[in-house]
View 1 (cartoon, rainbow, N blue to C red):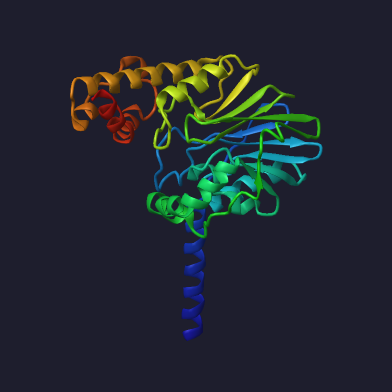
View 2: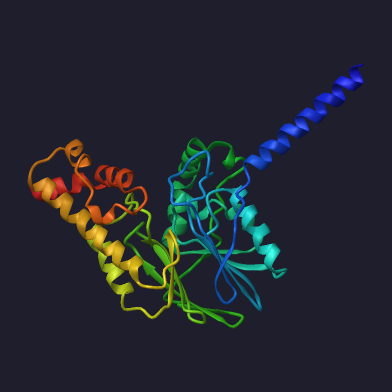
Length: 311
């Protein structure tokens, strides 16, 4: 009888684990967006226990010499799911991983790629070392069990763009750029072979932008104005759908100008932070996901700067 009870208990535990594992599966679906190039598009949402933090765009390029990965997602589990997707498409090894910046949804999947080179701007590596553990703890609070066993894996290769502006991997030629408008250290990667620009969080599209570490909205606008003059045919934003029309950059510039003007006018009128948070969103941004919640956050992040400037 005891043996039967033990067997039943074992089966129940195994079944519970299987259900748990199935529930916490990212089910990533690769979209081929150019020759050799696949996108894993995140949801137009905020972090939740339902989506497991899968709100970010990650991508990979399969070359003759191996696979190049741009950003690794919000957790170890995501990184492992990403590797499974890569393995379903090619048997070539991952040879280079690039972390675009230090926000957690872009680098916490690094553990799944600890067998290869992980590149990041030197400033990004320092920011991850400084803030990575706090970011990971916050992600645990936000998405729960999706983060199990996730720990901070630092980039291993500082990417000095002055010394290495261009990298050839197989027939693909990747050119790197540094911007600062979103996080203070933002890596962009242009595949000159396909014309795909991986813009990371310098560009959001159809999903409201986030502002916790921007040096200023004016600097971000300057970065985007530069992008308008670059030669590419497809832009992969950090969040939102791929754009081949140029509308993503125009939408960003338009929204940032509106946000900057709104905060400037509010400060000149002496509005309190709560009063600013209650201001209406311009109708032309009504189709962008999370505009209200991200506007409130931006007021919290930025409004004190505008108040100080108005004195």
